[in-house]
Image 1 (cartoon, rainbow, N blue to C red):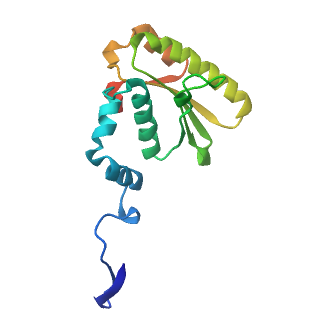
Image 2: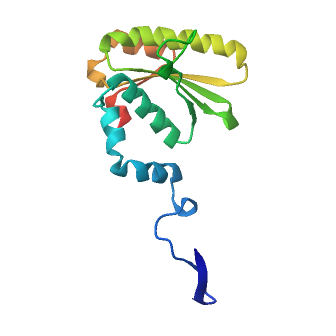
Image 3: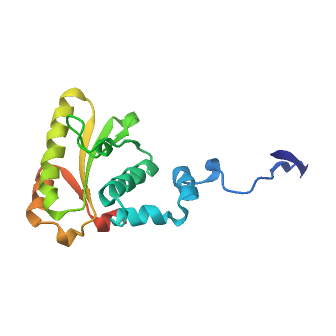
Length: 168
C-alpha cells in the first residue's frame, strides 16, 4: 500500500516490508529464495541427495538454468516416452541460442549421453538453421571421477561437461 510521505523528498512510502524485483539485482533468484530459503533444496538436489535422485537432479539443473534467465523445457520428465528427447532444453530466443542438456548421476552413462545429445543437436541444426546449439552434460560426479576418454570425446564433439565442481 502506497501512502503519502511526510514531505516532498519522500513523496510516497511503501508500507509493505520486503525486497522488490525492480531493486533486486537478480529477481529470479530473489523470488526462488522465497520458496527455498538459502537454496538448500536446490543445493541438495544438485549434489544428488534427493529422494528421486535422477528426477531431482534434472529438476535442480532446470531450475538453476531458469534462475539464470533462460526459458526452460524439461522433456526428460517424460522418461523416454517421446520419440527423441534430451533431459532439458534451454532457450535464449533473443540471441537465437538453444542448449541441449543431458543429466546423469552415473559414470558409465556419460558416453551414451554425449552420443545422444550430439545426434539430437545435429537433427535440430537442420531445422534451426540460424540458431547456435549448445550441448551440455551435467553430472553429480567430480571431474576426477569422469572417464578421461569421455572428457576427450566431449571436448572433440563440442559438448560441455558440467561436473560437481562447476555446478557450485
